[in-house]
Length: 338
Image (cartoon, rainbow, N blue to C red; front, side, top):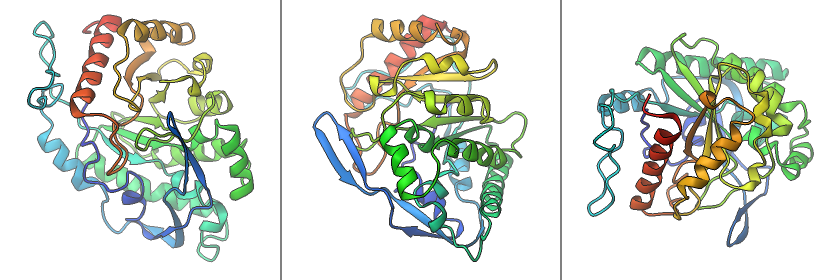
C-alpha cells in the first residue's frame, strides 16, 4: 500500500473538515500540553464549529485519490535520496505487485470532540442525534465517491479514542465539553460505523490511533484498556494501527480483546527521533504481543507519520528510509515473504 504522505494538506484534519458546508474554524476549549524528551509546551489544537446544517457540496479528497492512483506503481518504496541507503527490496524478494493506493481521512469524531455540544449550532441541530446522522451521511457521500474512483483501502485517523486513554485528558473532556469520557467511545463507535456503512464489501477500512504527533511531541499517555472493548468489538473496521513505541502506550494486554478476523499493526518503530531501533528488540516485542493476539493477526509499522505538519519533521529523509527498511526486514524475518 502507498499513500501520498498528505503533502498537499496544510492540516491533516481541518483541510478535510472545513470543506463541508457550514463548518468554520473555532477556538479550541482545550489547552493541550505537548510532551517531548526536551520538556513540555502548551498550545491549543485546531478545531471547528458547525454553524448550520452539514452538507458536502463536492468531493473533498476524491481528486487527491485519483492522482495518487495514477502514480502508484509496483515499487515497494520510492528511490532513495542521492547518497542515502537504498530502500528497495533485497534481490531475493519476490516481484512486487502493483501498489494499492490508500487514502487517509480524519475520523468523524473530530467534528465533535474539541468543542462538544457548544460547538454545534443548536438551531440547526436541537437534537444531537440529528447532528451525528448528518455527519455520518456526509462521510458516506465522500467514501462512496472514493469507492467509485477505485479506492479499496481507507484509513481513519482517530485521536480521540487514544486521548480517552489518558486520565488527565479524560477529566478535560468532562470539564471542558461536558461529556462523560466513559460513554463517549460508544457514541463515537456508532458514528464511525454509520459513516462507513455504505462502503463496498471489498474495501478495507483501518484506523490509526494517534496520541499526538508534532515535531517529536505527543499529548496523550496511558494504556488502551479504558477503550479497548469498545474499540475492538464495537467499531466495525478491519484493522488498527496502534502506537506502541514507548511505555506511554501501556502493555499489550488489551490485545486479548481483539476478535478473530481483525488485524492489529504494532507501531513499534518510533517517528519521534532518528535513532534506529534494534532488530532483536522489535522481534522480541512482537513475540510479547503474540502472547495476547495470534501472530497472524499482527503486523509492524512506524508508530505514526514522520511529520504531522509543515514544520513537523524530526529526522532526515535518509533516517526515514532506514526506518522503513527496518520495518520490511523485521516483517520478513517474523512473517516471511508470504
